[in-house]
Image 1 (tube, one colour):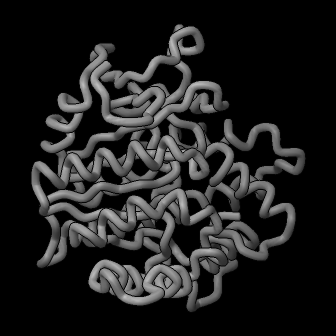
Image 2 (cartoon, rainbow, N blue to C red):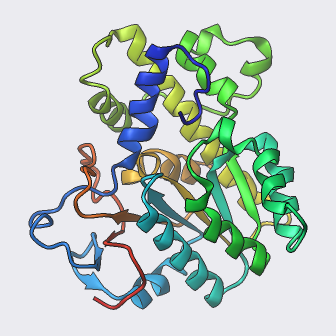
Image 3 (tube, rainbow, N blue to C red):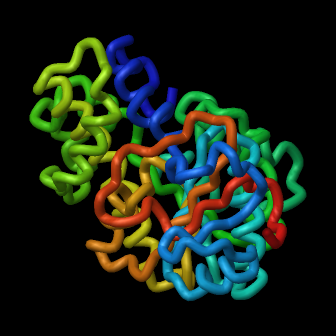
Length: 308
């Protein structure tokens, strides 16, 4: 269970819903989508279908490119790989930010990229980032993307908060943190009404919902998003910053720009674009978003970069 480790069952259920099941939301069902499942890329701002090449040309003008995912959907990971490969081909000065690895484990990512061909390097990577304990989804889904980074020398940046922090917030709230954990908190914006409404909708059917319970769950979600946003902005402000950064994360963290993108933009990480892979036949309707489209592009089918 992502980011919550050995939390009590009630916390696992709530954060599981919040950060995994709903994170699979990938752009929402547009009118007629159920009847039209052919592979295509939709520009959600204009309503036009565009080619893969058109999308890449526009994404190449952004400083940050967020590509969502349902963590267990191979098509979404193939889409991410195709986008990263194409962006790198246009301009190799790009890095990859990943929700899947927590910030203290950056050295293991650096070693992976720098040690192509080393014996048992994948095993060392998975051990070094504590993949099974802290992420848990099958690495096979992510292997092509990680191998692309290693073969091309693309830096991978750990974005996520330690699970010890998010788990403690979910259990005890922000005021119940130890002094040590409190030092890991980024700047938090907890009064975004649109974001709160989205999370409240996601948790609306939880059987143990109460005001206090919701506040803990919401605070944990904000800590998660703000930490990743802080990581994005920090990477782009560093002396050795890449020209652009592609971020992969559960789509619930990027949809509508309400999670990571808007919070990173508050820290200066602009301009940005959002791509939401969508697999027909999966339950991927997104919560209500009233600030505009859920992303710039919706890649339906997301199997390979074809021209619609």
